[in-house]
Image 1: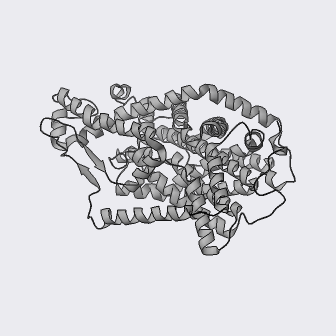
Image 2: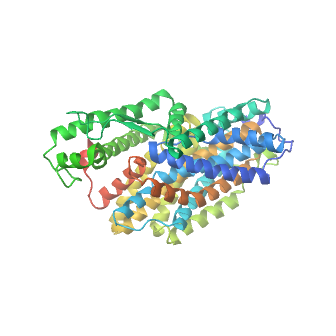
Length: 510
């Protein structure tokens, strides 16, 4: 069924309204940086990020109406397109790049500099956008009635509701104000403690700890994710702090268990429950995370293979040029040139020390996972897109190949993380781009302008994300209780395990 000839968007193709304006570019870029930083913090702290499309759209509607006193649904859509790219790029970056910071603390290598982080993120983000562009006609237009793209449709409904009026923006700004006041009272004035815990040495003979942290951002993530996902994290905390730590201290008091260097009883006496968490629990958690990612990837394999096959079949069907505004994409010639240039840069730039072989791996894995991610989010949504599972598979395969070809030590480890980072960002950005293009398809946006908007969001976010990572590391430190960086810790351990065998596999497998 050809949905192109039947579906009529909210703004007809014949109608021209403000879309890619100076204001929408600047507003989108600002939101890309803000949501990128916010999601970097959340992802490093709780191991998950939240979609920024709807908040960006709501904020844009509020600002355009209150300040500029005008209304353009396509201008609002462009703002959310640019703004949401920051969240997706941050998600890909924080899952992998902090591993280099952790190695720097161990004295294995230097921290990646800001330019290096920017180059890796720009290339990964642009690959995600340009790999997805040729798939738009196949996935968004031809399969309009088949692939729902839940977040894309939800964002379109918010934009359409805004056309009819409402107070959505006031609710968002009220939330921002309440959170800011609360943070000032807690962290600025110190009138309310940010954490409430039982003693770190335990309660009597019980060597566990019970506590809570009072953070509006984490509370909001729990509300957005819902009770099911939140219950997983709550149960993980209960099992770790109230069961595993007391058991380890009780049965292993006189034992010295790697990676610890002193008996567990002595470690607990000197550092309390936090020392047990840092030495043992996080490795058990990393194993659980890896298992979840692998299981998710295995369960998704039938869908992945079907997705890739269907995407390639649809792409082979051709994407002819159209005179309609709502069908105009970037030219395939431009897309091909940009992709070739990016692959050459990957092979040549010292900031991505992977060489020709690594560039080929990135091209193969990148295109495959971009196609898979672009279609899979149309079925299960961005929240259920197994990006970390894809990154784990890529990292394992790449690290094994790098070691087999003699790329070992710090150079090999850095190359492996660089490959994993690029692929992780490719998958995240490709999924985000497809959701945004779905929103645009429903409201009647111009695809080529949205695609340029994704490029703008990627570049702006990539410039800012390095500074965000440095600030967060300086404030709390990656791998700490405040910023556990669970995915990056796992990536670090995978590379170490393959390269040097220095991994407490007993804890990970447990």
